Structures are given as C-alpha cells and as structure tokens.
Length: 49
Image 1: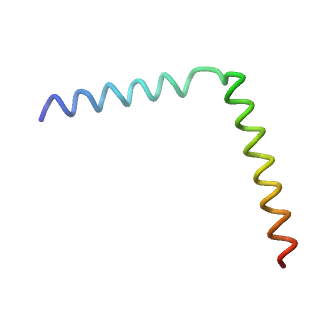
Image 2 (image 1 turned 90 degrees about the vertical axis):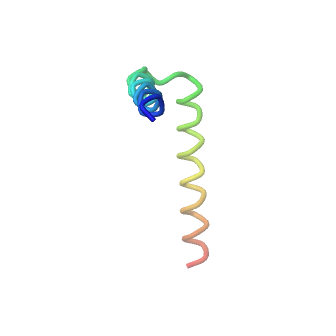
C-alpha cells in the first residue's frame, strides 16, 4: 500500500509543477477555441429561447 501512496503523491507533485508552467502556444490555441465554442453555444441557447 505505501507504494501506491508514494506514486500518488509523486503524481500530485507533477500535477502542481505542470500547473505552474507558463501556458504554451497549444494551450492558448485551445483556450481561444474553448471561448469560441462557449460563445457559439450561448448563441444557440439564445436562439432557442
């Protein structure tokens, strides 16, 4: 069991390190895409109502 806890802790540490890295171009592109999808979705919702 201690091995599982250790690997989970290591993964958590990696997640924190990854979260602290500055956004890459790919991430920025995905964020723009997400914003566009949100706007498109909101437009569709407004059209239905």
